[in-house]
Length: 177
Image (tube, rainbow, N blue to C red; front, side, top):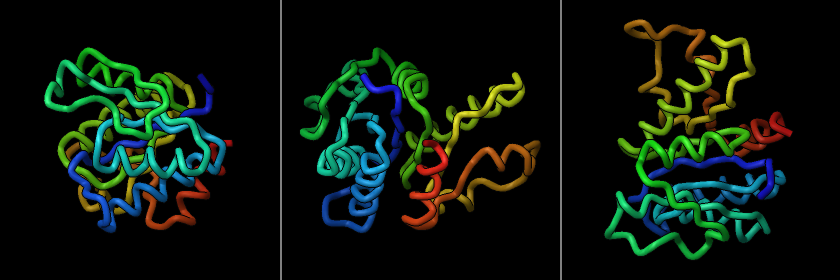
């Protein structure tokens, strides 16, 4: 398995033909075009769209599924080359973060927000330990939820890179090489 993997988090509710689907597919294409394998939760929605984009660009697609958690899902989407089942939701997220050079988060719901928070917290801990943090980029749609408040300050926010355009995504991916 290649060492250069970017994990993409996103909604399972995204439907084909929507603007969100097209965005996820384009993000997947850009990840593969930049020379990275793409890992996702492996199911439908944005995960499938990103997988499709990566596969169509010649990239390797890894699906980290959770069959015990999502028993109603019939397995990984058709664009997944390698399926890696995880026993739990947290195990799934942990596995994706361990294998990844960086994380991208598309728009999504509670599951995607959870994935962002775990990745962000890992990046924060890595900084506290004096290590380089895991690069975490989030679609600009998340920025209204991510602002200084409570005990969250600017230094923590600087661990996230908002992505508002395909050019910004290209620059983020270029920074990883």
